[in-house]
View 1 (spheres, one colour):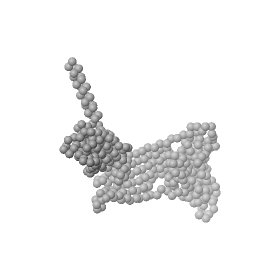
View 2 (view 1 turned 135 degrees about the vertical axis):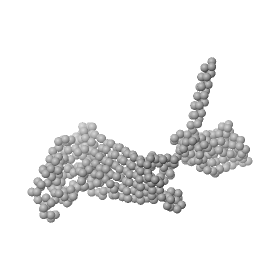
View 3 (view 1 turned 180 degrees about the horizontal axis):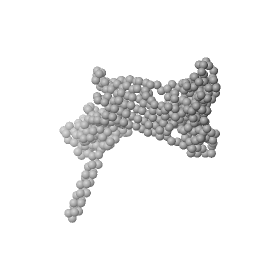
View 4 (view 1 turned 60 degrees about the vertical axis):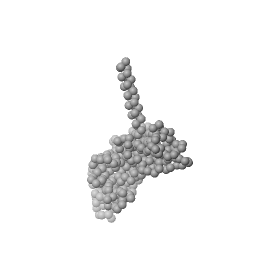
Length: 417
C-alpha cells in the first residue's frame, strides 16, 4: 500500500514538474513572448480583461483573456514591435504601443485600468521593456535596419562578432568548395556535334574543348598534331571541360585592437580550358604579338619591314610554327588550361566615430580589388577572366578582345548621427 502511495506521489511530482516546464517554455531561439498582469487603480487584479496584440511582423491579431489572478500570456510571438490593447466593460480601454520583442526575450507589460464614466480609449506612452524578468538568458535580434548598418560583411560570423557581449577570436578563417564533373551519357541516337563553341560527345564533359593538340610544343621540330587519346571520330583532341571542375574560396578575417578589422577574400579556379581567341585573331592578321617575340627575329631578320623568310622556319619550335607563321595559324590550337588564383579583395575597416562630432557611429572602409593573382604558365598573355561570354553563366569560354578586370581601390565613410 505504501509502495503504491509512493509511486502515485512520484508520478504526480513528475506530472507537475513536466507541466511547469512546458508552461514556462514560452520562448525559443526563433520567437519571443509577451506577458503581464492587469489591475485596477487600487491594485486589485482584474480577471476577464480582453488583451489583443498586433504587429507588422505578425499576420492578423492574437487575443487572450486575463486569468483569475489578472495575468495574461502570449507565447511564441515573432520578433518585432507590438501594440497591446486592454478592454473590459466598465473600464477605459488602454493601448500600449512600441513594445519591442526580440528572439528569446519575454516582454513583461503590466497595465492599470481605470473606471470609465464614458467610452474612452487611453493610449499609454512609455519605454518598451528592456529586461526579461522571466529569464537570465541574453539574446540580440538584428532587424533589416541594423543589418544594413553593419560596417562589415553580413555572414553569420560577422553578425556574431557584432553581437554585444560576444568576444570573437582574433583570426577567423573560412572557405567554400565547388565542384563540377559533368559527362554526356547519351545523345539519343544523334551523332556528336558542335554547338556554341563547344563539342558534345558521349563520354566527355558537356560543351567540351575540342581542338588540335600539339604534342611537342617546345621542341625545335615540325608540330606533332596526331591525337593519341581523348579523340573524336574525325581526329580532333578533347582537351577537357570548358567549365572549371574545382572552385575554392578562401576568407580570412583578422580582428585587431580598437575594433579594427582586416579581411581578405581569394578564389582558385581549376580544371577548365579556355580558347585564346584574341591571340588567334591578332596572329592570323599578321599583327606582331608578344608570344612570338623569339620567332620574329628569325622569321624577319631584316626588321619589321622585312618579308617572311620561310627558310628559317625550321629554327622555330613546334608551337611557334603553328602560331607565328600566319599561313599556319589555326584557332583549334589555341586551347589552354584556365587554372588561376586571385585575391578578390582586401578590406580594412576602421571605427572613426571618435573623430566626428555628434556622430553615433562612423566607419572608414578601404577596399582593394584584383591586385594580386597567379595564372598557370601555359596561359601566357591574357587574364583568364577576359571571356567573351558571361564566365560561369555560359558553357563556352573564350578570351575575346575585352578589357581585363581592373585593379580598384575604394574608400567609403559611413556615418550615423
